Image 1 (cartoon, protein in one colour):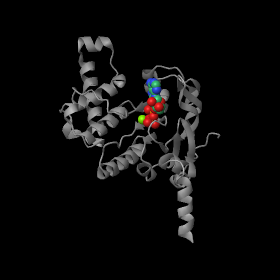
Image 2: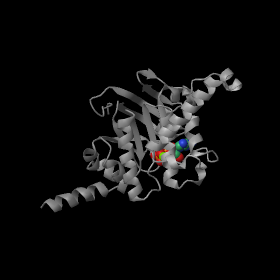
Image 3: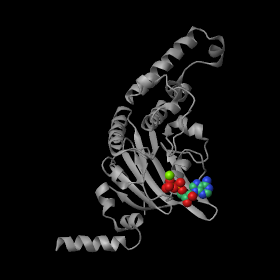
Length: 276
Ligand code: ADP
Ligand code: MG
């Protein structure tokens, strides 16, 4: 299967025949994927199908066993995670990873820090340049918090926030590093349907506001169907379908991956009988 574009924009991220094997286990195998600038993409598939491993390879946690990750025209294979982050890729994790004992504000300030614009000497001397930059840093972090409706929580310790707010804080923190590409690993996990709907609206909103390209992992197909323009479906480490929500939904391979062998046949039979 050749790589296919998600809209008519310019490609921002390209995975080319990407493989990540763990011993004999082909966690990710020969994956081709193109994410175009400003597109909202979904990556779905049953548990264990290789979704998180793809994020781990893109962000430099694992090196690919084979194949390439090309970001903004540059091969980023083997670069350190912090370099990849500085180049413009940020992510959230399937299991929330905040600094649990820091305040909400400091969790965002930390991510923004590489942009702070003062040197070591300024920090040691705590001169007026340092104070001014620190104030700007706090203001910027507060702006991000208000996008996520967390401005009233800034002084609280991160671990004390309700679960849904921790998820939002993690996205705010990812955005503070000014990414071009935002990778979200099951951000809706553990949320109730109302929280999920609000989160999906928020993802739409930040895509526009920050001119982002988004790749959203989700294992429930229903959740991404409504918001993603383009969906890639994985099973056992490989891409089994790509296209719009409508295109992948009716794909027998996808139905089979989700409902088990034989389900695709049953679905086809059911649809045929319903038509008659
Ligand atoms: P998903 O996110 O789709 O649920 P993962 O990418 O987490 O799936 O996992 C894909 C497969 O790779 C699973 O079988 C998982 O056990 C395996 N896997 C992931 N990371 C490692 C690792 N570090 N070592 C060994 N196996 C791994
Ligand atoms: Mg996962």
